[in-house]
Image 1: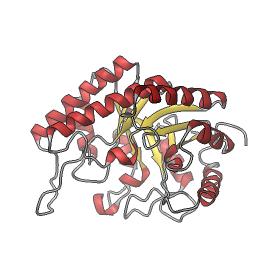
Image 2: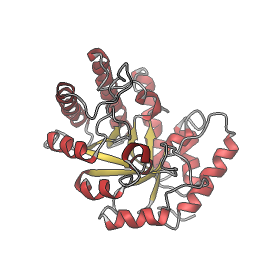
Image 3: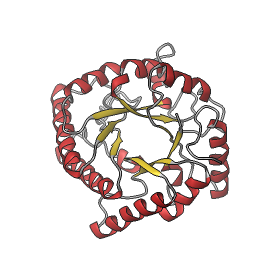
Length: 301
């Protein structure tokens, strides 16, 4: 149950493989998750091909596995496959196809992230679920994306549930339905579960805000787990130098009890761009040390 790092902490700082790969190695970590906040899949092919080669070379030279790539914050803001304008959904599909192309060339086997968000209603009232027509369209698009991913040579895709009612899936029941409707897709769709999402009490209520039922009920469909420190009020993505509700040892024990000890775990934290680079480095190093007893690194320190 070793710790991996989502490269979210590198955004606007250590932005090339030549910068982030030696930094990751110095932390004693040997598995990372690329974020597309570092690489825009719509950049020109020749540039993307050079960057993909750099990812392979720099990570490979240091024994770092680039396990998967996630969409990051920038693309997440566009509502993607549930935008009310169908042409935006088409554009989001093309963006994902380009993301798959880059991943394949970089030697990355899986890509994921939240899949879409409905627009807000004029009166601010949030629906309980996506409308059936929009849901059917979402399933068609996800199946089509699996075919594209398969053609590129990818082996797994990930959908990330979020604590927003306008996104899908918002609940365990919705996730179970989506898994059933995506069964047999060209590349399997699995879930990335996040400790800061399922534990958000304003979204799920004080009694039900827990990752445990997500892990146990969706066990066979869980492909990745995101770890963060949070307060259960908002989706904080704090590091573990902050006080919060997530206890690393308890988290590790829960993963094991759920039979998911072999599922990759990635620390996913975000820092204000105004924070100094030295402070970010210090906090990441201290966080890795704090997490070491629960999630041992894959490399000697």
